[in-house]
Length: 135
Image (cartoon, rainbow, N blue to C red; front, side, top):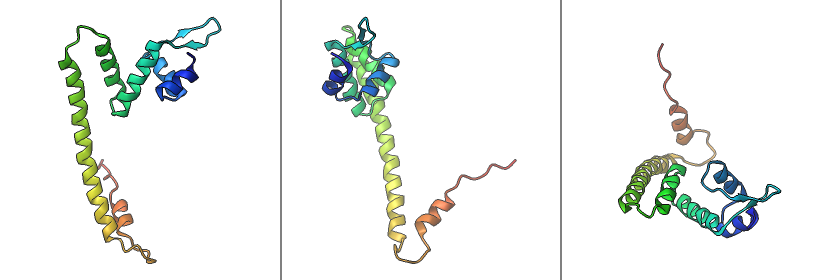
């Protein structure tokens, strides 16, 4: 299969597939003319990566998960550890997003949204600058 076929079948853009090749996540064969030739196993890896990335796993997580997937002697505890760590990162992000939402909802509520120039949203953004360190 060529890169267009694998792109269509895996749901990944060709640019992403080339990137995954560049960082060693997939290693297609090369024809004499230099064109990539993907095997079924490459397609399977790319579909695996697409699904893992859609769940938000990092590239390094994906690298580890692929290695574990290919290891017949793996311990599912190792897979669970990677997933549990990722779940913890998602939970942290949810807490951050909820706080952002609460703040923004308050600011939107406080803004009259009329023709007057005063705006609590802009006032808050202007006051949110990092403090300058004293020297």
